[in-house]
Image (cartoon, rainbow, N blue to C red):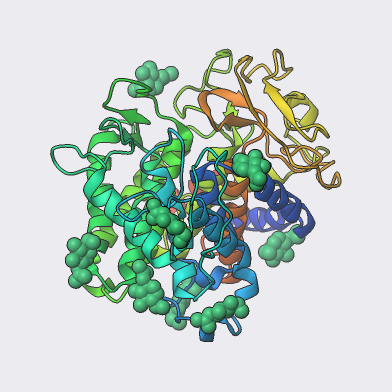
Length: 507
Ligand SMILES: *[C@@H]1O[C@H](CO)[C@@H](O)[C@H](O)[C@H]1NC(C)=O
Ligand SMILES: *[C@@H]1O[C@H](CO)[C@@H](O)[C@H](O)[C@H]1NC(C)=O
Ligand SMILES: *[C@@H]1O[C@H](CO)[C@@H](O)[C@H](O)[C@H]1NC(C)=O
Ligand SMILES: *[C@@H]1O[C@H](CO)[C@@H](O)[C@H](O)[C@H]1NC(C)=O
Ligand SMILES: *[C@@H]1O[C@H](CO)[C@@H](O)[C@H](O)[C@H]1NC(C)=O
Ligand SMILES: *[C@@H]1O[C@H](CO)[C@@H](O)[C@H](O)[C@H]1NC(C)=O
Ligand SMILES: *[C@@H]1O[C@H](CO)[C@@H](O)[C@H](O)[C@H]1NC(C)=O
Ligand SMILES: *[C@@H]1O[C@H](CO)[C@@H](O)[C@H](O)[C@H]1NC(C)=O
């Protein structure tokens, strides 16, 4: 029989894959992840950093409250829900972030962002909205009425006094729906001063709209979360590449490039909305929306993973700008690599799509590798830039020269205080400083420059590991996706796929 001929080869290929796969398994330890989270906790300051942090901590440490948890939404209300497996203690850091945000707000009534942000984006504060909604839902103490007045605080006197979480969330929603300008067809701007669309918006706003919808039993708002994504995609997607452009419209900051973090923000925001719809009471009537979101996420996966750097399993800062002799904005970036990998595990869990699971595994292992393991440059060869040494505060000056030719030599600067470093638990890792700062990363405040330490990048690793853990828990579905073809696949393609899988594992 013709079909039987390649089978011995296939068997050998599968056996080789099985032997290689567990032997090369690499994980960050809990101690390393804790140090990474400590840095995140102390360094996150901007609205979107705090919002992303709250989401990362939910997914990793209070997962029954995350939309990815495999049970219906909303979660059980109030403190009855806080018995096992729902732990109020696990939620405490997220509630603290919500508290700080609400306490920083003006106590005047009316549409406004949930957290004060000087010169910030209209969309970014909404990333804190899920934490605020959870604080309301679980009956966490609202910010007190007696916050001392402080006239020298740039946020003004009276901030946050007596603002309930429910009111903070409602006014944030109203602000987005009625104050922030829109495109003619209804896409809510990411900026307040002009209509401008950023890929980042997808992570900041639609997941909040969707969560608000399930918390208040309002399906039309869930539909709006989907509609905003659809509108954003219609503007930002480049059909040829399958990738999203970063920033369009408006007269400053326009960035038509395929910024990798922007694509990861978009995929991750869509994944959260997909999960929210799927766990909502309206899942059965929103099949086409779920199917669209699934397609749109997989489009980004296909668009991005074709450009995954084969030596390092990292993306370049701009996905398609892969020329390693270019010393500009196209350095390798571990931030976007982590966030996109998280969406691959999530999509495997939500929709059983495994196409890029081997890619995500390759990236996760590379990012978790010790300096002594094969094929990955050691940490020192990434340069010894800002944020990696035992400094307690610094003005970041990006490395003027690095030994890896593919890295940027930007001299842009940014500044914020670094936390007191934890013990050097990352000493042997390739992609972390001894104090567990992810590297190399794009500067979170300047997307064209390589940065030293990135709070959002720290959060993305936490999200990647939370997704990985959940995926391992249900048996690591799709771990050999490249060799697991459907029953209709011709035998030759199975053999070829097997050979490719082995080649990939060996690389
Ligand atoms: C803010 O709250 C304080 C204390 O409740 C109150 O005295 C003050 O008038 C409030 N300010 C505004 C603008 O509502
Ligand atoms: C606040 O929580 C209560 C339940 O305690 C819920 O009924 C209400 O809808 C929530 N409000 C918002 C804005 O989520
Ligand atoms: C929920 O638990 C917190 C912490 O114990 C407590 O402060 C709060 O009052 C409780 N809320 C409700 C509605 O029981
Ligand atoms: C007032 O707020 C400013 C800025 O947050 C802070 O630096 C200062 O220490 C505060 N002063 C008092 C008396 O709390
Ligand atoms: C759903 O939310 C929208 C936006 O806030 C609001 O206009 C509408 O009245 C809400 N619908 C219901 C049934 O509460
Ligand atoms: C990458 O895509 C951008 C945006 O379309 C384009 O301008 C640029 O030429 C592309 N770069 C490469 C190296 O293909
Ligand atoms: C989610 O829960 C359902 C019902 O308990 C179960 O059939 C399904 O396998 C679970 N999915 C995952 C990915 O755990
Ligand atoms: C990696 O993590 C997974 C999930 O937590 C665990 O099952 C596995 O044993 C770990 N592997 C190693 C080598 O530590």
